[in-house]
Image (cartoon, rainbow, N blue to C red):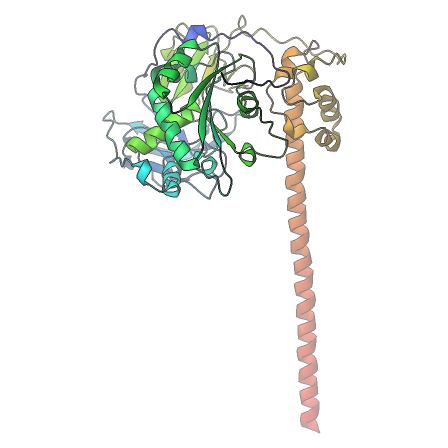
Amino acid sequence: MRKLYHFNGGVHPPQHKSESTRHPIIKPPLPEKLVIPLHQHIGNTAKPVVSKGERVLKGQKIGRAEGYVSSAIHAPTSGTILSIEQEPVPHPSGLRDLCISLEPDGMEEWIELQPVDYLNTDPSTLRNRLRDAGVVGLGGAVFPSFIKLNPSNRKIRTLVLNGAECEPYITCDDMLMRQRAAEIVEGAKIMRHMLQADEILLGIEDNKPEAIAAMKAASGDEMEVVAVPTIYPGGGAKQLIRVLTGIEVPAGERSTDLGVQCFNVATAASVYRAVRYGEPLISRIVTIAGNVANPGNYEALIGTMIDHLILQAGKNEEENVAIMGGPMMGFDLPSVRVPLVKATNCIIVKSEKLFPKRPAPMPCIRCGRCAESCPADLQPQELYWFSKAGNFGKAQEYALFDCIECGCCSYVCPSSIPLVQFYRYAKSEIWAQEREKKASDLARIRHDFRIERIEREKREKAERLAQKSAKAGSEQE
């Protein structure tokens, strides 16, 4: 029996998970139109490599990775490119981003797929394959997986698979583990080969007995499946690593510095599909829950409109507002007429009954409950005061950027203060100030170079005139 450790804080919000796990994963019908954003990952936006009116095949690359921190984008089905222009995307700002619109032809005609024998393939080649396949972290961070699978000179002893899925309502990973455990195991073996890891640990919260049983049956001796206590945010990477290994990842360091790397179980499954079958990441499982008639999990094509999926789950006319992600860390969508992206693990349709209006904030009474619940061992009330006062330097001294924005502090606050919103505001202001400072420094450097160039040109001109005068004088003599 593996010894389990604990992290500070955490909360136990109502789970609301049983509603969406009553049926197997569903494949919705092919939509009439797909809108595929070119920025679905951390890093640089992919560059379009197709043109309007062009016919593409399923799995064909339509956006190439740009720069090192980037990932490719692919056609989710065969059809015709309708446009390449700014479209609404799932972001709390409501802003538009560059997207490729595709009209499916219903033929589902694939490109020629090229499987790889990973045991006889260099890890660097495998990483390039994953980059070109558009494989990114499907736990929410959408960081390009090929980068995390490059240990450089670090020795990775432990590969951690994250099947905790601690947020309320979200069950896409639970259903994936129940129905496709073998794919996760095979993907983990590929990642272990690339990292040269000594062991694989899979952490699953103990409120998922079916998933635990399925993964244990499929894994054999390949990995250790560990049931971890159900507490939010136990699915955070640092928190899960702490629980499974006892390793505390210090502020400013990465788990790889301590010999541990962590991936979501859905990422492992997509690695398997990309290597074993040559399939790029063109779909994902998403939970549709909340105020719908038939909550469930849908394996939807990237670019499918959210309202199309809500309709499949039995839309109720009462509400038309939805959360992307969980109720703790997710955000309200500005509209349901936006596409599903690689980061979309859950859509919760809101209602007044499920999500009553939050009470008006009251003054902080310094009760300390926010500090007791903080899994990052911060002082949320102090961060709140400094953020509200615009004292961003002091907020940074109190480790503002160690905040994972899990929402535990807001959840337990008796004064109903939206604490996380203040932290996000402070972070955005600090980033804006840093950008302004960089721009100012660059402008000053350019100005200094310009002044120096002008002075140099004056000196050179004076020297030329002096030489010319001296030469004319010598000729007269």
